[in-house]
Image: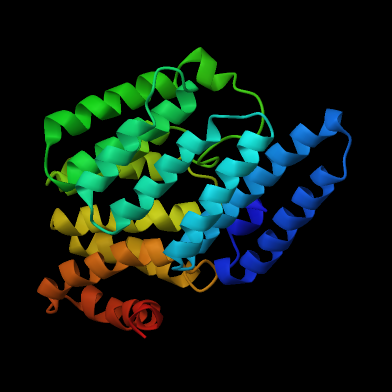
Length: 284
């Protein structure tokens, strides 16, 4: 389902994901106690991914509901930690809403020393993004250093079960650093970091490539590299019909605003119809 999520519209996947989550949950109820915990944990991962696809479809309320259900299923299956990861997911919703304080607060709550290092590392990344929104570079970079240390730890690398969070970004802390540098007003450094990390993404991961690719295009545009930014965006816009994304659209809107200052550029004029087509559904 994660592989399908990289190349399929979330509104198409959602009914299937919801059914699968309910099916696995039902099977768990009818399973012997020895296997019930594993079935509940699998159901919790289905619910967590369903929440992410709901957010990608622009349904923030449903996303939070599925995230809460994932935490409840995990607790029933004997995993008390996924509830803390739910805080990281909630912080992503507040982040895209532009709520820096809410993002930082939620992310800090998921960094208790008793939690698995991967969850704490992902939470530290989210906290860094919150600090970047308000321009606090020192706090942002400090959180990124903490995230890198946690995510690179032996315990995080050896964790059993399905991977929590992204499975297609080889170095999440490095990618998030590039993301944050743009919000901190350092677009050239952001573009360099995102160029490097986007080049490491698997070719089949269309959704992930689109998400970070538009942030990369935005960084190049903010650096004054307009033609290069348009070239990157043009390629990504061709993939957008296959992987529409409410969250990615936030950066597409920012890119359109940035490029609107350069309407005299032929590259910008050529790109504007494709930008408009992608953004039009979000404005209905």
